[in-house]
Amino acid sequence: MTTSRQQLPESIEVKRTDPVYMAHAYLTKVPIAAIIPFIEAFTEPGQLVLDPFAGSGMTGVAAAILGRRARLFDISMLGQHIGVNYQNLVDADVFRKHGELVIAMARERVGNVYGVHCQRCNGAAELTKTVWSVVVRCGSCRGPVTFYRALEAAGWRKEQMACPACGTSISSRNPRIGEEPVLDAIACSCSRTQLEQPHTPRCPGPRWRTCAGRTCRSSRIARCTRCRRSAAMG
Image (cartoon, rainbow, N blue to C red; front, top):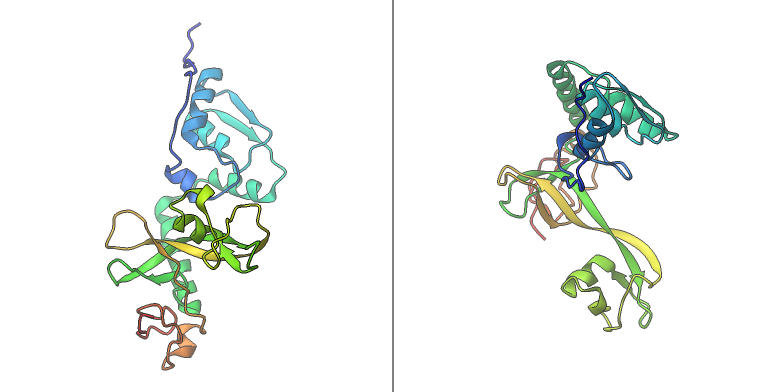
């Protein structure tokens, strides 16, 4: 009897950039490319793959790609929801059409809530994600210190982190007193890849249909994403 099983490599190194991996964030998520070698090494096409701690269902996606069946279990309702819908195959064109319709309807009602100003080209861009930093209390002056900013000022060397007000050493042992956004990742037509820039607060005003004609209160973006009116850079 011939077998199509592949030999398991000594080491497996993959990037976390494939479209399926990037579609959803999930704790301890494993890229499909890291799962496929194990399924190929221990099963044949048509056989059953079991994952009793399936998370967001990456094992099931890998099994489907390789022509295996899969039984997945997880206590997390979020993981179950994501995993089931990864396997809920639909027509791509129909999905895209209705997805664009939902997005257009949402923007019609609440405005472009992810619209941001690109600090590179001064054009309109879209927020991809925002990085938050913990804020700690200085042990000497008792003032707030943004951990990310202190680490950045120290040249990314933790042992040299210091309070910007009094110069006292700062570490992760300092009491945490809050969090604040520090960095935005954006998608802009001026770059083929995502750009990172200092966090820019979005306009806190009402949706654009009801605030048209009012002066935008946001002074740090070139154009208010709610009322569509220009604003001076602060």
